[in-house]
Image 1 (cartoon, rainbow, N blue to C red):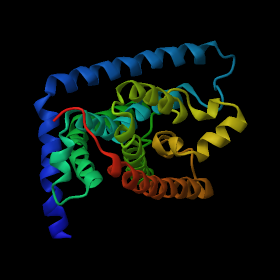
Image 2 (cartoon, one colour):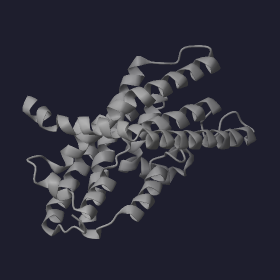
Image 3 (cartoon, rainbow, N blue to C red):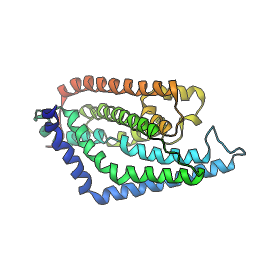
Image 4 (cartoon, rainbow, N blue to C red):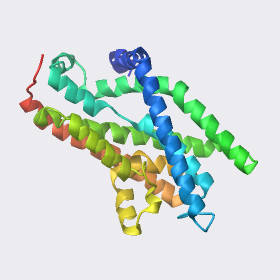
Length: 272
């Protein structure tokens, strides 16, 4: 285990330094995403106020605020840039430098992204959680934070990231065949955002469609951890959700192995 960690530790450090090196880009991205989050807040506020009932599809305004900001937070920690990075390495030929090293190709990306998450933990995660809990206390007049529920949320968030990572690895390996993924990456992000419940809560969709989407891996990326944080998933539903996340982690990992074995046989680069 020590040898394994020592082998991939430089990639974690690289991820940390990479995020810090491009501070302006990160800050601009954070501001843009924050503005989008507040815009969605006012959109849903208008929807809730136009409803004759204090709830809309089982959600109160407090629930919607919590859902929006925890979805925003979860999105940061489940986001994986591996598909774009693989496409870029194939385009410029730098993939050769990674492949000649005695390391696992996908695990090196995993540890690199772990370094980025460590930085995000202090810069984004803690402030948003504190802000959300202060809001809940202000609205209800009581402390709503539950260490047990928060721990379940963290576990679900880890599974969600692993599903996201291996899904993006699978998608990134398509660059071995398509050579360039930039345009399709944008389309993929929009589709995944909708299917994962990041754009509209899956609870607002028709029952049949909702049941299908909750079984697919996309719900595991955002909707499941957010609903756990909100305390909407309890008992058997909680166990089923964890089981689905674990299932999709292993499923995506297995698919990535199959695609890798096929893709590596036909590697060709445009640069380098």
